[in-house]
Length: 296
Image 1: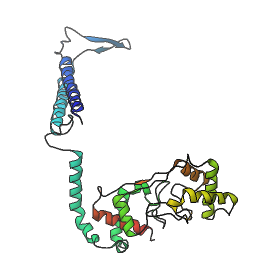
Image 2 (image 1 turned 60 degrees about the horizontal axis):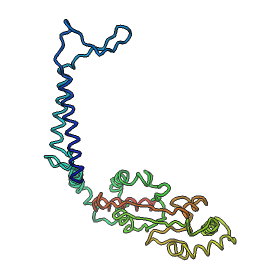
Image 3 (image 1 turned 90 degrees about the horizontal axis):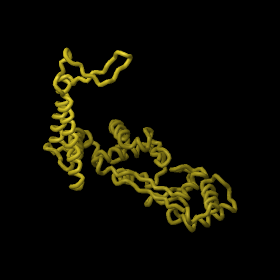
Image 4 (image 1 turned 120 degrees about the vertical axis):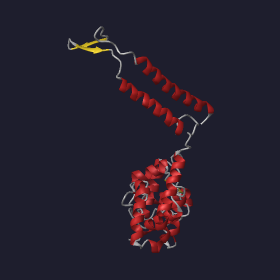
């Protein structure tokens, strides 16, 4: 944060606290002797219900003053005044790191006994997989679903279809470093007729449609535009995460409308890296669980 905005925030917060204090002092007038004088706001309801203009009770004012003192004390100890980090030096980063350290110390003994087991063997360890299932629920279920069967744009982890490979090493690498998929848009390079021809060829590849003249045109277009990523046999390339177009398994959907949308708009899928969120032992255990899902 720049010095200007830091100073602006400090001024704004300080002005608010001072303003609240002044407001309390102004409104805390001396108690009125109602035996000799009754001061009202001029508001009357139901003919005889009059709103009096009397000071707040002392105990109530005292609570407001305590709140102000608490606010000043909090701002002195914790971040809240621009770039001032507080006397305690607390921050969300340090709190997170402390929590991570505590968790690592707490669970390291549990994970250490799994660390030296290879993933295929670990995937058969029932006790380990119970722990790993909870890790999956906390870190992966939001995208892949609690049943790990995915959703449009999020891969199904229970089958044998893998964009980047389903070996233990590939799974562990995907969790650790993340993946960035990219399908370019052909909106400007292919006409609607070209896209329809390509779709006819793709449908033929996985046996949904018989050979046709339209599919023949699509095959020529495929050779010109798609072969570099999906390969001459259209079975994809796990090195770059390009999809296999011959198995009728789709990440975003395989209807003609969705395939045409993919060709027109392209796709950009991202698997976030977890190397800064989870330690190596945790990732190893989690990879074993993901591996086990496709082995059932």
